[in-house]
Image (cartoon, rainbow, N blue to C red):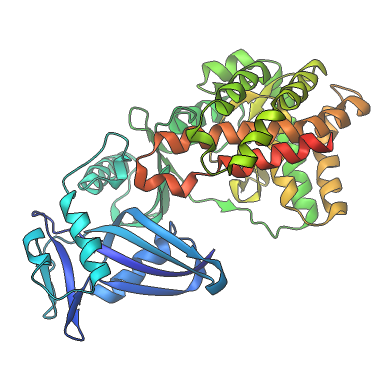
Length: 438
């Protein structure tokens, strides 16, 4: 996370126009500087910043472009906005500009190019664009929420955006009887229908997965009671319990992978991964962020990558339910225990894929303590030597699993959203480094 300098392209509610503000004898789209360290998808910070600038709360649709300047600890982004209150009037120093206005108004050249290019394609909506990034989606979700809250005996007070990016959006739903949380996820090829899968897993594994209070299975919408999420700075014993308890869940699920698949989890077992990796390494688009030397290196080492997958499979640990993004921020306290949410990547795969977040722990002693806690339930399944060898081999298979995921995500998003998640190269570099260590 970093400081944010944001440019907002605020759409007119009914015409192909954007808001420009006049200052210093030039017209510009509204800009804000967020000095607190934040992520550009953190709508809970971004939207209030624009509200202070405009005098009305906008609705964040999507990120059109961004550039990070690490040396200045600054991220510059362009974001598309719409009005939450369509009756709002532009201020005295503002105007709604159409495409024909851009060439005759006095704008800095960079802004002229930015706004003109945006207006040239303002009506273009690609099939890959997420539903919540389309004008009018807000009205749809408000209508659904109002109806569901009546069923729950509540009244809608307000809806506040918390996160907006290419693969999901999260809303805080204010009601007369407390807050609820809403989430929608993109229907991507390697994403599950999170609403359906969460409900089914909550039924199979009560106490491990939170029960939704409402869902729309066709649109993948899900509504939760508020929960006490864990954080990265939890005490060591809490984090040990997080990994140990999740391993207990995996051991239970390993006895019935057919049920997990029937629940909507994807089949990403090791033979499937081997095929996916072969396809990935033949896909030039997926490797585009590696330099030519790195592409040659990863293809030369491909047989060793496949050998690591094969050896891991031969160890015989059973496939199990895999979260796909297991870390403290995706865990919560539920009735005195730890439960797990954010199941978009749910699949049946090698269980040790869910050890990936251990690498982010800088202290080796703590990493080993967390790993030991995770392996505890698995010691009833296999011997220590087998488990430890599987851990080593999974350090190659796991980044390959994620490289496939991120390459697929990036290819499925519309071009403006791809840079947010175009990260397959980082996982491929990790896999190559780990294979060389073997």
